[in-house]
Length: 396
Ligand SMILES: *Cc1c(COP(=O)(O)O)cnc(C)c1O
Image: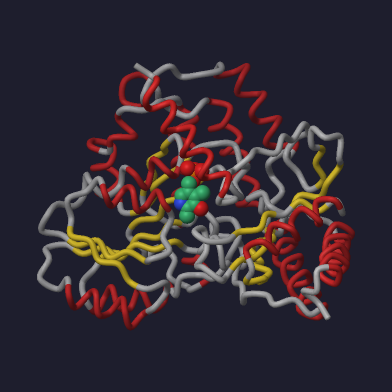
């Protein structure tokens, strides 16, 4: 009977709303891009998408998707190992490996699945997973599904990581797991130091490149390019749902034996559908574009540099960033919400974050830059921030 739990859920929903934590959806009626229309009729500039390279509505990707609809149909109606593998999936997997300088790749429906399905097939109770405290929810869930012993080190803290490696020294296999870029601060994991510690203590390294692939490093190859350790990381997971076109799809890429075992045993791969041909073909077109030129990375890096510099000059407190994420620190939860809604009135779409998404007392507005932004978009955003910042007493 639904009655009892219905009352309970209504109470829960009421509590969420009263705590100011209720998540409502804003409805966009245009394609995803720098300037979007929302269903209130308002035109706004989008500074909160993961559309780092501006590819979500790129004509080449749209054309590749349409082409595949005609040549390869709409859906696969199967998991990969039964009858859900087309030439497109194999080609895309090879292109991903080429992009990251790895040996082989396995596709998933999403990176949430890649992370959910990576640990359990590889590690058991005699092994250790040593995980950064700010790692993504999907890594945390993946670790929960695995019997390995768990160790957690403070965000990007190499002393603490070393202490945990020492604690785990008697385990059979050890793996250090980290996000490449942490999504709330925009900092990168110190991959060079992680790599050194991994060598010293005989551990493997896994990095989740969701916010870094396509974005960091001179040509966007991610944190292994940025830290000059290309090909040295054992496991990379990533998404096609952010910089790489933003549709859907995840992957694990790395050492070939690891990928082979995942094809045999990774549950989200074995028991969930293949990505549709149009997504695979658009992904191929996207990686072809990346192989040709890094002009989108150049533009993104220039945009980020310009924006951060101007915001600091305007007097804002900006977290040091190594990515396309710029955290404008406000420290006050309510202020972050008021400021974000006032910015929306000014035509700037950004989100304010506060506890528990970020630590208590560290509320902020997160601005995400994109190669899809033009200089005039950035200037409008900075002007609006300055105006609202003065109104709310954030700026003197
Ligand atoms: C977005 C994100 C994911 C999930 O990716 P999806 O493909 O959307 O499931 C996983 N890890 C990190 C670090 C992310 O930022």
